[in-house]
Image (cartoon, rainbow, N blue to C red):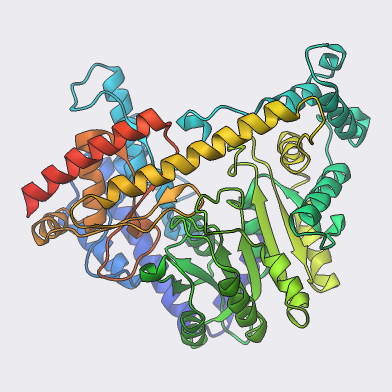
Length: 566
């Protein structure tokens, strides 16, 4: 926060670059847009006024969004009618808070999800709908979609949080042994105590051993491991660290399009520049070296691209990068001196028999120098894979080849947050130090893990086959991760109907789907897409029976939609 204040102060007292001026103008448009919406809410209007729509459209143009379509933010749904709107007596108002808070958007939990929650409440009250439940296919929340927790992980958490259970005969000895090792690493032998800011040493050492095993014996130093509350805080800490002007230009972060909205939201929050590079949908969402260079060279005119984000396996696109593709990315990062951020949280979620997960660390190491010395940060989370423990918030990052002085500053910044939750750290321990053959817990662990991954593979194939049969759909196979990202052709009549409502066509499609069938998805415009194309993201997480029901509802809706608007 203090750093942001210093940056803002410098902006006030010295000339700013054209890029920064454009950014400030954009923020002012967004502020005016939100003021207009909030005023409409205060007046309890039932539709977006022309003034609000015009302000929103202006904002969309300033952000450089494709075409003339905008996604209106219906903030009436964000505020209870019992809340009073800000008045002049309030110390905090939209024009005196951090404008980056207003500019940021997070599509995965946007207006569609808010409306889905409203519909659920309406159904509870007995409202008549064409459906009896909302199917939330908008977010990768495994347990919310019916996945059962692994017995091993929950036993480990039970023993570390209620130590009297260590005397119970109901818990296997190998789980007790692991619990005692974690407790011995805690101050006062209690998970209620603070840990080191980077996490418990015993768990960090386990992570290093896990990485060495995964990468075929390539060494991992436990002191390069930082335990985090899910992958997101680690990603944000790295982006915050590189948030510095160089030669009068703001920092830029290269992100894939389509991308996971955490990146665009954080980049906006920090006032940085988002540098888009497009994945090649025609070749299974592969990543081309030529496109990376084009994006980098174009961005250099207005900012300094300082980091390259790669998500593998892909979210929302579900692709798994080949080793050759990874080698090209590493060469690009080295030649252009950008920090490589490898988002590898779906590394256990590979379903395609011809695909294989390769860690960026392993490939860079095996390429030899100078690539072995590439500045690289990789991320893993307990929220994905086969654990799916989203709410426990466990994860780690491995930081490689940073200047020791820079690494010391990173560590110092992390200490301000004290430590990640011990619950999350225990979950990381369960992920990286699972039961081994011959141990009492192994057979049940293997059975549960394999069943989860087999079910995900089945659903990936089911969703691809179903959606690929729809008129006007183009669907790449789901090679990995937990999502499908089909391209859809939207009839001109529907495009016009969307425009009349001030919506992007894919947003219009998603709202119609929700109101008609109860299925909640995320429009492709929330992730980014090539101009003139329309997509959406859906998870493959609903249990198989519900997923089949969802695909049938989807089929009926899409057929009716095409008939209505063709």
